[in-house]
Structure formats: structure tokens, C-alpha cells
Image (tube, rainbow, N blue to C red):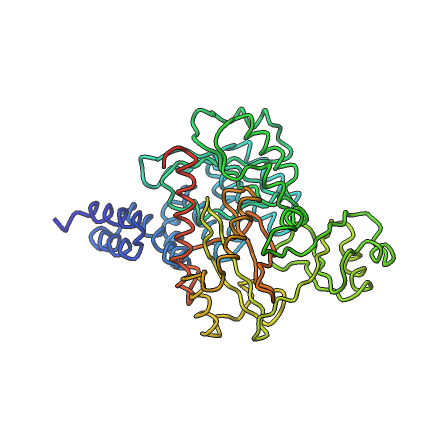
Length: 464
């Protein structure tokens, strides 16, 4: 009975849950050809558009629907998310604000307002927005996309603390997710009062930056202890993943080289004379502000004068001083590899190739060089062709020493073939389609990481 609009819509939803958004779109469009005003098909078509990397068209569809239902807070919320994805922050905030005005319980929209203010550097306004959100809706609940839910997880995140990027990892989850924001201004009793511990089978701690999240990590650790549930990424272990602590833990590991690292507290003596007495290694030295990632506030300096200038520019911040290691390959280019650990698996995620020592995957010109993409694809397909048995053993020993359930490592191979470690923490990004474009070969490997993450959660929740 091909004339049944609802059946085409339901077929689309099934296909969407099965990870076939293009086929889902065809089903929704067939439903709309039969009934152009069929609301479920229109709303689901938006989600399919977003899943296939068409936010501009999705936005147009949402605007059309919002014009028909101007008092629908959920439509305004979805418009805010799409505008945020399109980097239209002013429009995104306007839609989230309208959603809150239409629904006083729209705490998730209020959290988004806080996130936008924080991204714009308005920390005071962001903190106020987060507090308002916590009062409106302390716990953000996201039901499983494939009911019945396998289990319910409590997710801890810190708006100002640096978090594991988990949007892709939690997308399309077959389990219920309750998200709790850890705000330093809230006390533990207040947080516990919002929870029903018996509802959860595990805790997923996303608070990941030990440099940024001192107070939030302490709150997370106390909450985990009080609830007594299995936890992914114990906050106490996350607290021991600063660059200095990592260098100390890996200093004597066979087959591994982790550059010596010292931390300078803000407000100390940073004069050239004091620095000369302090440094335990020679120039060049890498200097970076603690709590930064992706190459921000990170420089190589070749002498005391340059180091003193850098530190003077960032006098109010703690800074790391790192022993520089020249890790150029025989062809003169630099190569930086990323593995993601999920449970006991060490899974390759990307390779960055460039002409400069400071490599950040998204800032390279690899898409302009087919041979670079071919080399990355070959590494992802068979990392053992680059990392031999000794290096893989070193990677797994790092996993054991760090002790986290889910985290990443950025590394290289030095001139002697040793594993050269740059960074080890749970703050590394994994994302999926449609963001890859010409790098679509990466999608399979991102999906393997997502599957390993889900298997880890199931094992922790006793649902393996």
C-alpha cells in the first residue's frame, strides 16, 4: 500500500537509526510527496539532512517550519544548533534565547547560550547563563535512539573545565544519557539532590583537562565516590594527566621518549637569570601556556631572551617548558600520529604531515597532496607497518600507566625508532561523517573507535 504516508515516514526513521541517512531521506521525501504537510516526515528529514552534511538546507527547512509554528520552542532550539554548526553565533544565540522565552524549562537551550558566551570570551556572562540553566534543568536527559535502552549513564561535564569531545561518541546511543554540569559555584549536596543513583548503571566522566578543571575534577571525584558506580575515566586518574605528570610517569619507559617538562607557576621569578638557573635542558625550548591545545599559545624559543619575552606576555598563567626534540623524518618532513585508546584497544585515528615542527592535523595542507593522504590511509589501515612490536608494546604500557579507560596519544618516531610522546590525555577529538570530505577513508576508523567506546560502556555497565 504505497499510499500510506506514515509507513514511508517510519521506514525513513528505521533507515536513519540503521545509519543509512541517504536512504532515509528518500523515504521521507516519498512521504512528503504523498502528504506535503506531514509534520513527522518534515522534522525527521531535517535530522537526515544534518546527518548527510547539509546544514544550510536543514536550516531552510527549519525556518519554514518555525514560520508555521512560531511558538514551538523545540524548533527554535534546533535552529540554534544548526546556526551554531554554521558558525552563525549571533543567530544561534537569538534562537536559543527565543526557545527559553517560549519554554521556561528549556534548560538545554540555556546551556547553549552559556557555551556561546564562553566561546566569545565572555566568561562572566557564560557563568551566569550556566547557573540559570542548572536552576531550570539540572540534568539534561537524552533517551536512547534505539529503545529499549541497554542501560542509563550519568555523564559528567564541566563548562569551564575542558571536556572529552563526545558529541560523535554519544550520537545515536542505544542507552539513555543524563548529562550533569559541574559548576564550581554548586555544592556537592545540591548536585546529589538532583540525582536518583539507583537509575544509573555507570558514570561517564568527560571532565578531561587536568590543567583547566581542578575544582571540577575534585567535584567529579567526590561525586563518583559518593555514588559508588562503575566509572569511565576516573577523575582521580584524569588529574594525573598534566604534561608534567605524564613526562614523569613515562620518563623511564623502555622504547619511549617523553621530553622533559617543567611547569612554571604564575607569579614566580621569570627573569633571565632565574630561568638560566632553572632550565634542566638546553635550547631550543618549547613554551606553552598550561591548559591550551591545538598549537595555541605555543612557541619554540631559541634563547633566554625569547623565553623571557614569552613568559612575560603570559605572566598571569602557568606555563610549561618542554625539551625540544627534532623529529623530522628522513625526507625532512614532520609526522605526528594519533592513537585512541578505548578499553584495551589502541586504535589509529590520524596522521599529520607537514614542514613545520608545530603540527596540527586541521592546519596541514594534506588535502593538497594525494601522496600524504595515501600515506595516512595506509597507516590507518595497517599501523603495524609503521609502529613495530616494540613501539606497540610501549603504547600499551603507556595505557597501563595512565590508567584511563578512554584517551588519546599524539606521538612520533624519533631518529632511533623510539616512540616519541607529545601528549597523552582524554581531551582529543574524534568525529565522523560528514566532516571528512576528501578524507572519507577516515570514517571507517572513526566508526571503529566509536564501536570500541560503546563496547567499553557496555562492559562497564555489566551489559556486555
